[in-house]
Image (cartoon, rainbow, N blue to C red; front, side, top):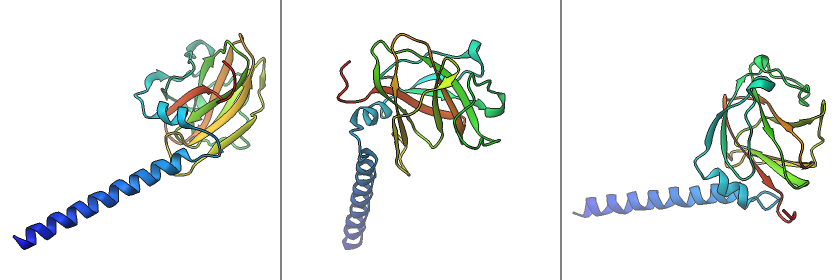
Length: 179
């Protein structure tokens, strides 16, 4: 009886330690320099599955405040409308396209669950990111890039240099920006 009681106590202690470690990891993943609660909540949801585009004709449209899982193509098979901004293309990387449009101009965040390159193309040029952040070991989200987006125009989200063919992304208004 004493042995089974000790075993139960040891099992409970291990389970508690694992729960505390998981909570600390989740806290670390929400402790960006920015307020990322909206992104963190989105990444806890079930994503909408989409095939990332490989050319303009196959490019899906994404909306704000929705989590997507884009299935990407081999990067060499993607016809980017504007060359990606990454200094070096990973020959074995994955890439894809999505379209987006915002009704209100302003700062927006594009978040991803893995290290990769995020660009927004418009009229043959890449929009310059306003800022970015990332958190190693985190997937909800891992990387966030902030852009100032114009309203009412078709923008192309370009994903490149992804290590995995499936990437989760979301697009959210930057907190504090009127929408």
